[in-house]
Length: 118
Image (tube, rainbow, N blue to C red; front, side, top):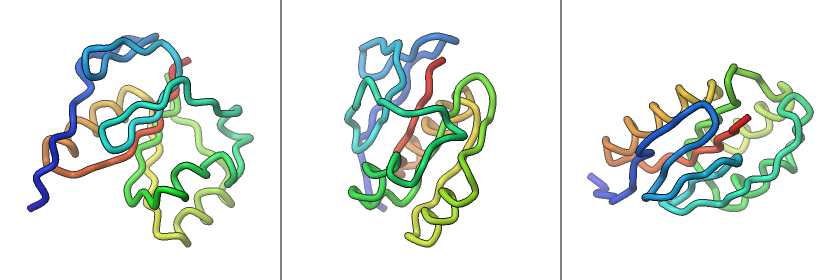
C-alpha cells in the first residue's frame, strides 16, 4: 500500500475552501498535496483539451473535476481525449468533489482535484 500523507480539504462553504490551513476563494487545483490558485479556466462547456494541459503533462491518473454549484460537463471530445490518454476524470459539483477528494485521500490514494469556486 502506498502510504501518502496528503492533506484533506478541511472546510468548504459555497464561496471558499480551506486546505492546509489556508482559505481559497478562487478556483484551484490540488495536485500532490500542493495548490495552484487561482486556477484559470474558461467557462466549463467551452473548455478544450489544452485547458487540461497541467493534467496531461503531469500524467494524472485520477482527476476529480468539481464544476461549481452544479454539475456541468466539458465537451465530449475533451473527456474522450483524456480517456484515450488513460486519464480518468470524474465530473461532479464542487461539494461532491471535495467530499470525494477526502474519501480517496483517506484511502491513501492520490487524486488530483480541479475545483471551481463560483
